[in-house]
Image (tube, rainbow, N blue to C red; front, top):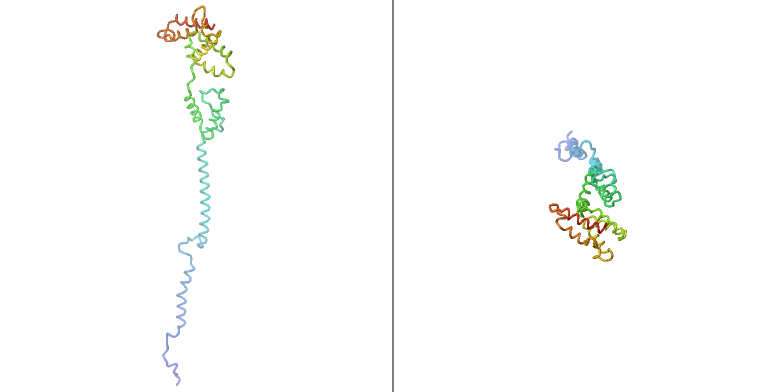
Length: 251
């Protein structure tokens, strides 16, 4: 009678979990919860969290941007230094080439402009001189005064002096530079002599020398003869006759 219906009845094992089953369930669930709070596998060891990595990346980006600007500035400075390395310290320190007369270049506005332009563009001394050479080569060559004087004959000096005295007497001062350029050639001297003849006594036809009967126009016509100007057919007597005629007319 010690047994009761309760103790004799079969037990339902599914009705309620035993303590050991509860403990096992908790144990199995714990690792999943722990894994969710662990650091990501892709995160480098030196960073504690993804936030630390983002912060470090931001700082690196700023440093790289600053460094890029520094590199750009330095490169620009190097390029400028390379471009200007051969120019003198100032525009006034360019040296004029030997073929330029320094006294004539002191107040030359064109040369001053070229020196400033060359300096601003970093030209070297050689480039500065080359520019002047190119310009001068493009200009007409100045007349050879000795050759032009020779064309006037043996009394060229007298003829030139007479033409100069005539110009100084009859032409205004402001026109003399143009007359001087005219007289850089033999043809210019002859042109002045024509004016001198036309003004003499107010009548061109009276410009002839009464003693010789030969006018300046006649003498200039004689100068066209090959006996006067052609070395291979030179006639000294004929040349002396022409020169003597000019001497009688102009003194």
